[in-house]
Every structure is written in C-alpha cells, then in structure tokens.
Length: 495
Ligand code: MN
Image (cartoon, rainbow, N blue to C red; front, side):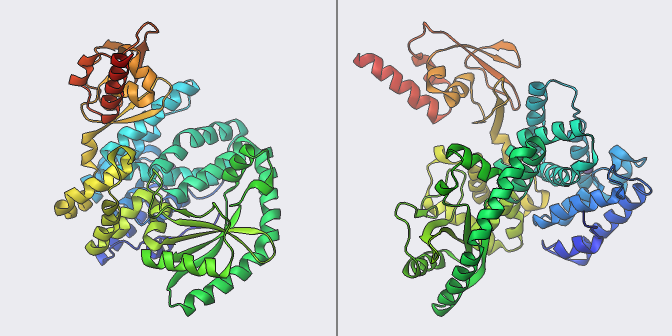
C-alpha cells in the first residue's frame, strides 16, 4: 500500500479550512504518532500508517477537522499505553467522545455464533450512529484500510472479517449512502469470500471493457465538443465500469450472459445544475440513437433511496451500446459521499439550502422516503439552528426515530412511539393481520407496547386469526399499519 503522510491529509482536507483547524489535525497526528511509536501492523507497516489511511479516507469524504483528528487517534486508547483521559486533556471532550465511540464498537470480537454476531454488530452500529454519526463514518474508513491490508492475516481470519464486512459494513455504508466506500468494501469482501468467481468476473469485465474502451474514448471526445458548442459547462466526463461484485450479481440474474448487461460500461457526465442535465440529454440523443425503454429520469422521479441522475443507453458507433449517466455535481457528491456530503455543503449556507430544497420541492410522499431522506427534511426544518447542528454534528433528531430488529437481524426503522403492531405491518401485511402477541428482547410485551431503540422484536402470529382488531387503530402510529388495518376490516364487512 502507498505511504500516506500528514500533508496528504491536509491536501484532502477541504471543509472550512483555517489555521486552527489545520493545527488540530497536525497535533492529532503528532500525538498518535508518538503513541504508536515502534508499533507495527501485521503487514509490517508502521502502525501510524493505518491511522493515516483511516484519516485520509475520512478527509476524502469531506469531514471536518475534529472528525479527522478523531480518526488519527482512533486506535490510541485500545492499542497503546495512552489513555482516553489523556486524549480528552489534549483535544477536549468532543474528540474524546468520538474516539471512545470507535473504541467501543471495536470491542466486538468474533466469538459469538454468526447470527448473534451479526445482530449484535448491527445493533451496536445503529446505536452508535444514533449517538454520533461520526463514529460510524470513522469505523467505515477504518474497515476500508483493514480490508485493503487483509492479505497479511491468516486465511480463516480473512474470511471471517470479509464476511462481517459484507454483512454489516456494506449495508451500513449503503444505508448512509456512502457509495464510494460501499463499493470498495463490497469488492474487497467479494474477493476474499469467493476468490474464484471474483477472478472470473474481473477477467470478464476487463475483457469486455477493453472491447469498449476505444469506443468510449471516441464518444467522450465527441460529446465533450458538442456540449461545449452548446455552452454547457461540463465539470467531469469519464468512462466508468460496473464494480466487480455488482456485475457478478447482475450476471447471476441474467444466466451469466454478458450480452444481456447493458450498463457494464458507460460514460458519466457531471454538469453544474439540473437544467444542464436535461440539455445534455438532448444533445446526447441528437448525436446518438437512444435505446427505447432505457431512458430513466431519476431526477424527476428519484429512486426510493434518494438517488438522482438521468440514465440513457445509446447505440455507439461500433455497434456496442453504452449507458450514459448525467447528473449535477451535488447529485454526484450525494451518491459518492452520502450522509457525509452534508458536511461538504455546510460551508456555504446557500448551497446547503439549495441542496435540500431540491428534494423538498418534489414533495416525495413520506412513506416512500427512506430514513435518510427524512433526516434531510428534518434538517430543513431545523434550518434555523443549522449552525449549532453542524457544530455538534450530532443527529439528535434520531431521537424521533427508533431502530428495531427482527430476530434475524433485519433493521426496521420506525417513528418514536411505534408498537409491535406497527413493526409487524412493516414486515408484512399478513404478519400484521395475524399478530397475536409480541416479545421485546425475548420477553412478552403487550401489542401496544412502545418499542425502544435497539430492541429485538418478535411477533407471534396465529393462523386462526382472520382479522386485525379495530382497537389497534387507537395505538398504532404508522400510516402503513393504519391503512392495512382499515383495509382488512373493510374487506371483512363486505364479505
Ligand atoms: Mn483501526
């Protein structure tokens, strides 16, 4: 792996720079460097390289100086003589709090059975997230470097860490919308879990991409000049590949037939604003014939996870089709950095506002919004207190939101005050309709019990039960549950 220096980190530190903040990062480096002195990683690297890589990943996401400092210090209390108290004395309560959060998350060891471990890890991640999202962001950055250096460990350990990455870290990175880290983790985990298919898919991809490469370059240069001619400011235009794991997944659903994959390779165009996206689309279609049924406008109709872009597949000159993705810079940052992109835009209030107002105008129905989307809309409402909010970076309004778990570890997010009946309908209409009793963390609780954050909820059903009870309408809080219950009762009256 490449050696990272503190200057690399400062170069990538782009969030609200000032001398005091840069000094904070330097000081954290000096402190960590001293603490980890003479320590080596299994790979033989200086230990501090791990801290630096982690901090670099965090800086690249656009995080601020305190988070970068905490990333540099993240392994100090766990792996050196220096205590958390000393970190607090040197850097203050806030940084020490984040470091301790990372340390606590790190204490989970691979002793439990797979399922227990999975549920417990997810649970802890979500609870940590609710306390301070920065902890989880550092943890993801830390895991990325650990995955990149996994080869130094014993093969059995490699496998179990790769498994945990795929089952816990990838879904969380995905949930937070940090596509950049998610794809890297996914491919690295795939490589260790299923080396054979990884290798096969990678070779296939390289071969196919190779066939398209010239074509892609030609189309890029044509489009570049056409867009310039029309005065559309192109911020970036480049050829892109599907990640190995995504390609493998897609091939599996298409009988491993490469000819059925239309988006293997493509071109991404990043422009400055939404009108330019549509203008660019017009120009692309004027130049190349689009494939019917493959034009997708995720700007007008964002995906449920908030993803926005325009996709179109064109017939390129040499007969191969190419997928073209067009999006604005803000949409792009959101795909790559997800929740972290909020901080990128925190420097400029105007940008911050337009970033969110875009979604607000669309009035996406609440039900279809993911919790991240809700998070964003809450942020608009909290707009007046934005400064304070950004300063503490704590997602306090998670307090209005709880995460519960199925016995298998699936995360169900619910509004505060939700009951086992709300939970049951979130899983499946039939489970709600046939609910008879419920357990929270293994103990029987009434159906109107208010679920607490992090609880594992089990729903007991009865085949005999035909209909929900009208009484339930008095205590359920989700519209999902309400409409299911009303529908079921109505059907019963009609029959
Ligand atoms: Mn670490």
